[in-house]
Length: 317
Image (cartoon, rainbow, N blue to C red; front, side, top):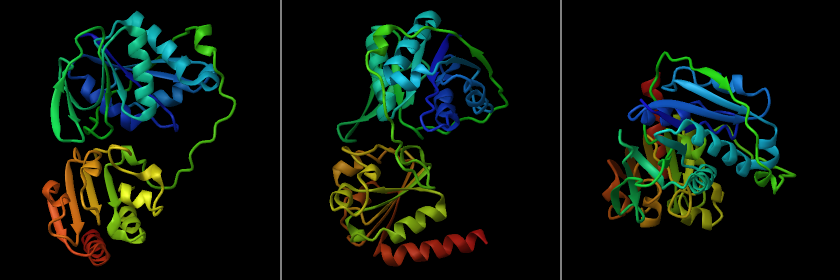
């Protein structure tokens, strides 16, 4: 079987969960090969995180130039690996960073690109949710090596007994990829909750919170979930824009999405309707979110969420 290259992007230091998901898709159509582009001396530790996934092999390129020259340097090396390996496809996690890498790589490789896929078949035909989530379409790259970005949490990463061997490769970054140098980086401040786009459970609040996210956060902490927010909530300054879920915010596909006080406008639905199970809590029985929900509670979130937490805690004890 042909190799399928997965970019094990370690922005933030962790690679296992996202790559496990990519590898599960990749195994349908070939042999999953993870590519790690990292600083000198970091490959072994990052590669060890991929034990127990469907990844069959890890190819690592170590260079401190990745930190200095960023995405152009990464794409330059990734393009060289694609040229030498001739993979069946390249899969990348569908974040803003991942989509930039994928877009640049597609141009370099003269290939077609598909973004935000939620499913990938053995022949690399993909399923996407498009036009604000109004349609589900099938797409397939017809020219070059398919470059596909996949939404995190679109599939559960398989658990295996694999322990992939890390193969370190020496490649030279071209001068053209070093035209712009990064002089300063200020990482975003992160709390103790999961990353929104990678969380298996997301609890979101909207206009119905009236600016008080205390109950939403308490439910999220009980479930080990990320906190999201509707555009109405972020525009009002009630919650940071970095947590906005929707067409102009972040797209999520968790196993469970709990919408609290969110009416369900099409803009918001576009960012979360591929969630596996959707629970809606809203005082308005005619709220559009109920058309999408698997389970709905008509009621005030400030009354419903405390009762739900008590019931969950009672079950656990």
